[in-house]
Image 1 (cartoon, rainbow, N blue to C red):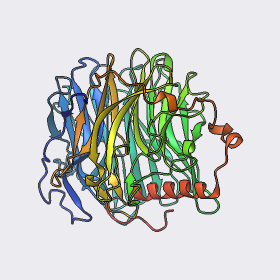
Image 2: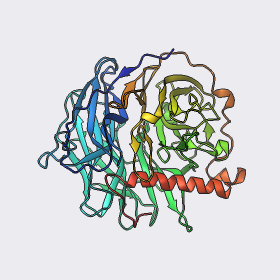
Image 3: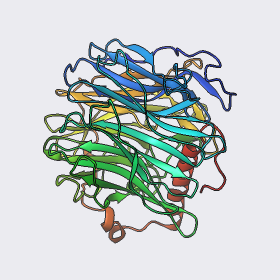
Length: 511
């Protein structure tokens, strides 16, 4: 028996041709993906979320929709943001764009809801293309949002990707946005913008870490520790001499609200090989290169990501590394996900006020040998010590074959680069996307399912202890075979292509 599930999304509010541009790729009307949930600390029954509405197979969506609930997720109202033309954007209000992606939510200590998203026209680094990071705020629990702020606006010379926004719980009125910015010269630094007046105005965006030529960061996200220190986590991708790639997870720190930043500190190597249908080989656009970071009481931090190290490259599991000293050192990765014989993907994590840590993820345990279907389920694992885990099933089985299909050269079934997990008191709150079996006119919806069931101790027995295979020690404990390294590199390349082929084919000069 699953916990109660409440649908947050609704039929699309958008009309045909609302973006004012020629259709390129397949439009999945009514398909919602990639939810981001925030809970109002002033009124914890007030939940506010954002997601992409009407996903395009060629990347991005028609618009950002906000869902808000005042009864702890049981009922929801929806409204679109004027970040695109379909959502009511115009040249006058700062939302005159064809498509949007990567909407992200956060709520400040005084209850102000903040949302940031990408908006763009055309392809990546193509003649005539435009790329922006937009933000807006709500002071009425998500019922309405104020003017659109443009944090950065680039033409064809650069493309902005993977924005995350964080309201500072330790220093009220401060809000931070962070993303990666690719340019035609093959640089991909981390960019950062800051508000010191609760999102009313924003300082100019600037680079805070540059990994150098032919390298980039991706999936930047900031958490704020109780002592006020900012931690920006990201994946650093390095181009190799033979034209391949390696990647690792790292952090940089700021003790002055983002004015200055430390040198990077490595968390661990990233050995994701991606998720595929075991019968057909079809790809899943998962969270390869998109780790999740969360912090809890005492400043303890956890990073979760997909990694194949515990199967010698056969498939990804969900792994975790923990820091108890402000990010100076990190534990060796340990496997969290059960179902060791199947791929697990797309983690989201949080820490409750009592220190219990939770992580949600998809896996393929329900799948069968039927080549026409790809059955998946959604799980919540929880731990009081970060070493042993208990799990409950949140949702599924559902047929992943019905998800919107990315139709770029890096095609794959897409539910979002991330999902959400928060908590209220002792209750974990997963927000996630599943498919609607048999309904091709409404392929996906966004749900919440407050976790009230008692977990079963199914995962802990098979989870390796956090004692080996980490960061600088990885070379001492195992070596990647040439084939394994090739598959890791190819997965990085495929993941980058998927993110660079938004709207139209990507520039051939980019790796």
